[in-house]
Length: 84
Image 1 (cartoon, rainbow, N blue to C red):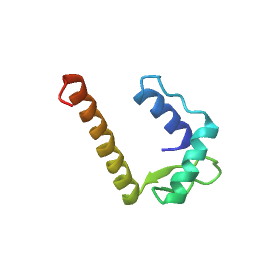
Image 2 (cartoon, rainbow, N blue to C red):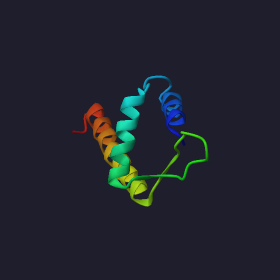
Image 3 (cartoon, one colour):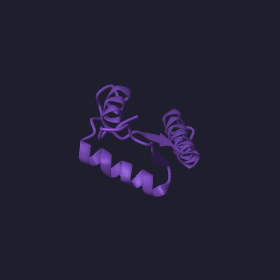
Image 4 (tube, rainbow, N blue to C red):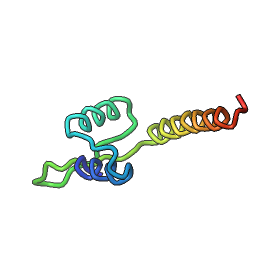
């Protein structure tokens, strides 16, 4: 996806609860590039649009974060049930 498409996708996925500003998004993109979690794809001629793709390392980082979040949800569920 390109930057503007990412902003739209985040808004749609969050049902409008998260609206990324361009500065926030591009700061995050730079961090993801530096960590090797995404790569910039070759651009089309005569366009400033940049597209990005997740790397295997990025997929692993996302999977690790999903597991961490699932643990938090599971712990919260146990607390609500009085199991902890």
